[in-house]
Length: 279
Image (cartoon, rainbow, N blue to C red; front, side, top):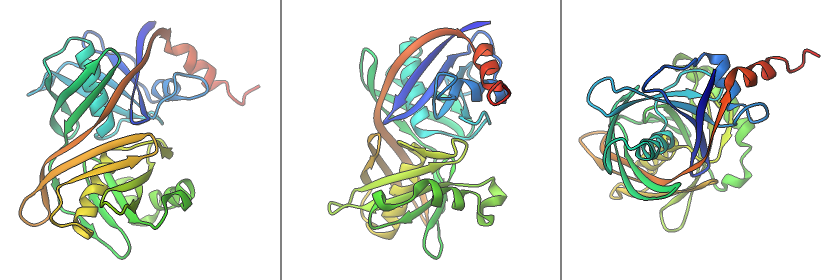
């Protein structure tokens, strides 16, 4: 069956999107992985289906990692699906939508054709563990945060993969891994290994949020806003600190872009991918 597919990216974090309000498509693990495959499909870090709202929102965001597994919240994905909803004519400049970790708000700050700027309210964050040489916290997805002198010198794939699959994080199905380099002005650079993608991505929204909170706790306890420089672009994280280590009013802001749209039969991509190595 032919369907319409869309591709969006936020700071280089790219996604396949589907309008699934009227009919739920085949989103088996094999189909999602085939669509996200960068050689045999559209190519993306993940896939999102915009579905009818469950409760409290204008739509539901269902998120899948590139490996085909349904996953938890994606910050840049949330910003991209908000712009997608805007292009579909859903809601006004302030949108409310449901996701796996609750109801989110997204504000369309700018929208000019394919391009936009979106800020997304993230879930409140409860606690941040300071361990021997890293921080660990959950900003909708679990994140390991380590400070380094130079992010360009880090083997993000090798070290990230080893940490992601280490016994320390096996209980929650592994973790995303972030390396942070502080800049003289108090902002920071970031590189991230994402579970489910199983590689470095050009940006990670929940990772940028986790790192901003870790930088606040470790270095700048009076600061509530940070600029985050990922390999794919610049993001901004702001928040309020409540009692203890609880963070509220957490916002992630940055660019979102509609890259293209197409109509195709996903079964063809799935079949081609399944045939790899069989001949």
